[in-house]
Amino acid sequence: MSIRVMLVDDQVLLRTGFRMVLAAQPDMEVVAEAGDGAEAIENLRSTAVDVVLMDVRMPRLDGVEATRRICAEPSAPKVLILTTFDLDEYAFSGLKAGASGFMLKDVPPAELLSAIRSVHSGDAVVAPSTTRRLLDRFSPMLPSSVNEPQHKELERLTEREREVMMLVAQGLSNGEIAGRLVLSEATVKTHVGRILTKLGLRDRVQVVVLAYETGLVRAGGGQAF
Image (cartoon, rainbow, N blue to C red; front, side, top):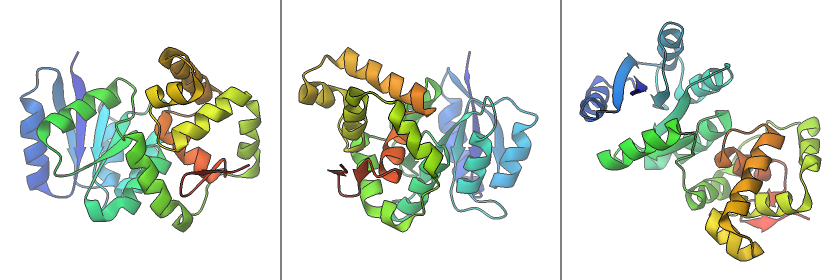
């Protein structure tokens, strides 16, 4: 079955370029397009979509708020934020809103296609090191949306799971975490899966965001004890 993609961007020329790239793939099809977030939400009411390629700065309803509303719905499609280098703060806001990752608009076609496939399969497409740089730069500027009851959710984690969560938030891959804690990579993957389940998170990107928001890890990569 093809991956059903919706393109959301107020620039028709960009949508046309993305559509041409995706149309050449045997496992993808563009099933809908929208010029802003409000139109995207409206389209989702009548069209089944697997992955949304979401611009950030658009009229009527921007991509961050649209992402928040889309991801709040049951059985929501995956959202991949597309942004430019000097709009990193919007990309971070998009991750907080529930996006599975972000990429630059000038990304090579092969990387964009790989990202769409990864997001569709349930993975995050933002490298942990990239996520860490975003959080280090912008987390002090953004208000936390986490309240005290959600802080207490961290108490459900075992000591080992908290260790793994802190290392994920510091930008380490599963392999690097395995080396640091002298575990197998499969065991680390299992721990990450349990963290996601216990905290009700979608992917490791949201693990990183929550770790910073709760103070488990502080901006700059330090641990909070």
